[in-house]
Length: 455
Image (cartoon, rainbow, N blue to C red; front, side, top):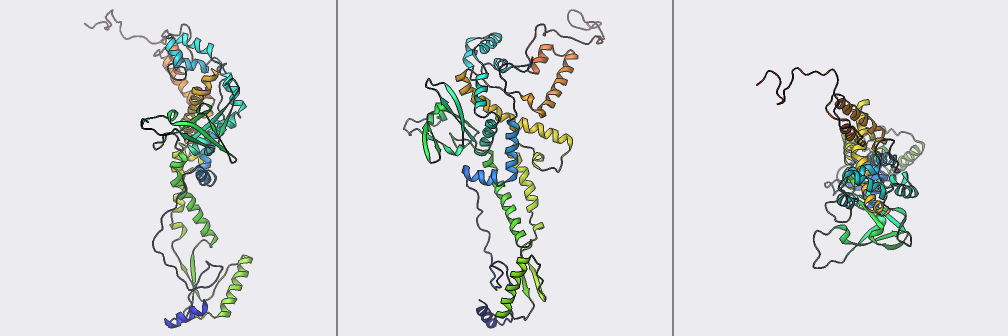
């Protein structure tokens, strides 16, 4: 209080009330709060709700990474069984990849690859999976699946079945609504039990109601987690330290802007006395000026800087570094989310290609494999997608075609070897070597293979 403050100042031999602080409704005060060291840092909890709020909703870089991957992934073209022109159909690709799940049993029964291809084509039809995927939302389903697994590390597809147990529809569940009911521990529980052996049922909670679901009706996709046998670990969790630092830096800049950009205090001239009427007048004048948006200039007063300037804080540099670190966690080139420091036309094209090769296609491959191992196997309907449908990959495809064409025209590989390199099927008569007509040997070789004139 001013009276007590003046009394303390008088006893100490001071004649002024030196500090005017704007922290508490523009009230003048002589309090000086000293620091006692930095407190412990506060980090965002690692729950789905907290990470989705602090990461995806409050951080523009995380939103840009996830939405970029999801938007690119939902543009994929799924094959419907007719193949891609004269190129490769999903069934032909499955025949070439024989020996891998979920068609290992066909490979064990039939040894000839041509027979395997005929057997798979006769027993399967991709259109059933395509129809079910479209019924569940199609592109929006893929977009949500990609977003959920990047935010939580897990995806849960619930299968709705008919009375005869055939799948009729699938639903993508929000990851925080699904929890695993683990089997009771026993003395003979092996330490290397898999998720299938550990999970007794899945518990789905929606709008205050919970219901159990048998594991056969849940397709669980997850990313690697070194500390958990059931749940996956999200890339977002690995980036949370950088996200918290970036969010805190933005909040600091906001507070600085709201305080007039530079924190500090005003000290009155030496030997000045602040009486009650002067304090009241100053408060009134500050209030009117603040409401009118005016700047205050106090005569015979000194401005003291407190702390450091925002330019010296390193917040700006930290934001750029955090952007790059966050982008690297999601395998997204930083220039695609706003870091254009070294961007050129050529590097942008390489960045687009890297986005698909390192971020989009691996996740779509996991979705395809998890679908085929469960729903695809039940429906006898394997899914596969066309990598060449991505515009950025088309350029790489063109480069591969040029490389294979040069090898073929140089007589180094056969036509079928060239077609196999480009994932096309073999053709009759394609195993013959062709060489340019202008290629002439420098010497004739005898039957032993030695050039003429040599012993």
